Structure formats: structure tokens, C-alpha cells
Length: 600
Image (cartoon, rainbow, N blue to C red; front, side, top):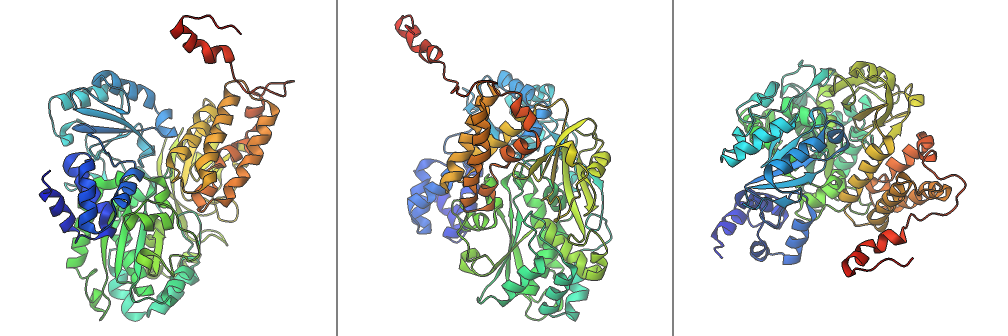
């Protein structure tokens, strides 16, 4: 085997074992998959064990060990995609290619694969083909795309759809993705020029004063947990360490969430300035934007924005003329793993490992990336910090509620006329949001993605805020025509089964058991004891290591609490035992093979 191309790839990253993700991603782009015989070579060149390389490759969804076709199609199978016609699109792909999902066509041209939400819930059904995003797919468009594949056209020419609005149409992106910004607030209003805070404010403020201003604003993390941002920065500022890091968490893998995609597309300078502001506050010298693989189509554009900021002295040495303020940012892509949205799993991935959450304490502010103090903030949080320093904490506190200051960017999708991005002050009710989005005959709303809460109309008067109904930003709307248990809860449980890192026993097993129990009920074999099991079993999930694992049973827990009648109407009345096992059906196939009649 010629190893020169492998050596060149590994050398580009200084033979650094912590850059293993970059090495593997680049190799896959080169070959279309990662050949098994390359793994021992990578291990030798980076000085790590082959087992380390093997376990990293095997963990991530987009790493392929076998050829996946000249055109690798990853079709989203999230709940919203299914609602918008994914089944017809999938069938068209199979008919046109002559292969089923999970296979490669006989000629090796096209591979079909399922994948979880790709951040396009406002324009489904959607797919990634060789990393390029194709949205609003129909059977006709599929036939057109496959025809162009067979004609040998490059992936950029497979579709005749135009480019999306805003920066999506720029030469460095050229994506058909739409922003669908339906309502703007303090973050999305174009009332700020990138770099103003770095140039005009930091000269006048010490790092401690920056932290104090953020604390006064009462800004809380926008990733879902809601931890006070200023307090996190203060902890990291005080932490001992010769080098500190700033991470921006852009791994929004929660189905129904796509706000970070829009912020990175239209406001990347604001995101990067937020990271730089945080670096000044805590004394960090290096920043890493950890971004999900599904957004790799933004890579050239984001790197261009970084380079322009370096030219303007907004990154690099002595930023904005401040002596000794040295800081720079690089991109780090994941490779398809929902759990990497959890901050410690993200750090493990960035170090070239499986994305398995760490035990806490220590927390990242004390011992994070490479064992050094690290700040991890959400995209939206960092953007908010810049606006706070520009307009002032007092101004920021005039918006929102007493316990939830400022605004929240929501990703709204599902059964509504106006899906997209809405930036609202905290304090609106669910009813307000449904009216804005043009949603009628609403049966249920999933707030905060599958790990959040499925609420019924009786709760639509609840207020969006940390004190009442907190959310990381996802709203999925279901009208009265949807089968909540079969179409929604079952889909969410399959998602958690696929996306569990498998580290904790409850997370590895309980979602599967809950799904089996749910299927038993849906198939008409449920009894009252099954409902009792569904209520009791999820309690064990609380001992999982990370927050994602602890909430993986939420689709069952919240649907059973708020839609219990849907379960009860499927339960057999007057029967206390039914395992749903049909002995005659179980032996039917074996008897047919040997030519026997079942004697039951």
C-alpha cells in the first residue's frame, strides 16, 4: 500500500494525535471512506494505539469503513422530515437507484443511508449528498438528481434549484438552504458592525470589568442549561493554568433545532467576536468553533471570515492594538454524533476520541480541553455577550422577564405556515408563538427537542422563560392529524437509541426497552401493567453520566403525563397479562422451510 498520501495528510496536522478527527475527515473526503489498512499507519504516525483510531472511527456516523458510492446520499429521517413527505422521497431514491437504504448500487455509483436531523427542519425533506445540502425534496427532484448522477455531473450541478437568500448565495457557500428569518430582535437586527466592541470598548475595560458587565446583564447560557454566563467566565478567570481555551458549541444536533445554522451563516463575525471577547475576559489564547459535520458546507465561508478578521487585527497578535492580547480561532468539525453537543463529550471529540461525556467534577472551567481551563458557550450566548458590551447591561435587562433577561432565538418547524427563526423576548406564551407561526388545530408542541417536553393545549398558556417553560430553542408543532405516539414518541425513542454513546448502562438499554414497551402498546397487546412500567422505569435514567442521557426517556415521560388518554385507549381492558407473543407465528417460517404443520 502506498502510504505517502496518508503521511501527507497526517503531517498537515503536525502528527498531533489530538487532531485525529481532522485527519480522518480529510482522508474520508479524499477516498470517500476510510480504508481499514490506513488505520495502523495513522496510529504509527501519530504515536497512538490502533485501538484508539479504531474506536474513534467506529463511533461517528459519517465515518465509513467501506466504499459508500461516488455519490453518498444521507437522507434525514427525523420526525419533521417524515411529516413533510420523507417516505415518498426515500421510495423514489430506492426506485431510481435500484438499491435500498443502507446499501450501495451494484455499479458502486450511489449509496443510500439514513441519518438523523441535519439542521434543516424548516425545509424538509432534506438530504446531504457528498456534503452538499439538498432541501425541500420531492420524488420529481429525486428523479432529476439521480439522472444527473448517472450522467456523471459534479455534486454542485445535481439540482436545478436556486440558491437560498442572504449569505447562502455567496460564491463560498452556494447552498439552496434558506434562512427563513421570520422575526428579528437584538441579535438578528443589523444594528452592529463586527469588531466595534473589540476596537472601542476593550481599551476602556479590564477583563474583570468585562466579566462584571456580563454578570450585571444576568445573561444565562442559551444552550439549554441556563448557567449564568458571567459566573462561568469568572470561574475560568480564577482557574489556574498557563493556557486557557474558548470553545463555541455549534453542534446543534437536537432534532428541530437550526438557529445556530442561521447565526453562523448570517452573523459569523458576531460569533467569532463573542469568542474573542470571552478570551479577553478569561485570559485565553486559543479558540475553537466546534461545528457539526452537517454544516461542513459552510467551511470555506467561515474560514474566509476568520481570515478577514485577522487582516483587520480582530484576531491574532495584539488584537485591536491591545498589547499582549493574542488570540486566534480555528474550526473543528464533528462527524455525526448527537451526544457531542454535551460539553464534555465535545471536548473528548475535539481531542480525537469517542464523544463520551466525562465525569464531573472537575468541570471544564477548571480542567477542560487538554486538561486546561476551558470556556464552552453556545453560539447564541456568545453573540448576546457582544451586544451586551455594546449597548450595556442595563439596556439588556429591560428585555425579557425577571428571571430570564434578553431574548431567545427559537427554531420553529412542523405543522405551521411560517417555519423558521424567531427572536423573541423571554415572556411570550406558547399560544403567542403558535399565532406568529400560523399554526392551526394544534394537538401538541415539542418544546426543546426530543429531550424536552411534549405539551398539550392545556399548557399553551405557559410562558417561555427559565422559571416556567425553559427551552434551548426548538419548537416542533403537531396538528390534530398526527399520531402522537406512533409518529412522534416512537421516532424520538429510535433517535435516542441510535445516538446514545453507550457509556452508561441505563442509557444503553432503557431507551430500547421503552421503545419495545411502546411498540407492544401500539400493536394492541398492552395492559395496565405496561403503563405502570413506563412510569417507573425511566427513573433509572437519572444515574446516567450526562444530561442528554438523563433526559433520553423524556418522550415517553412527558407524553404519558400529558397525553395519557392516547395510551389508555390502546390498552386492553379487563386483561392483566399479554406479552404479545404468538407462538404459531413464531414457528411459521421454520415449519414452512421443513414442510411441517405447526402442532400447537
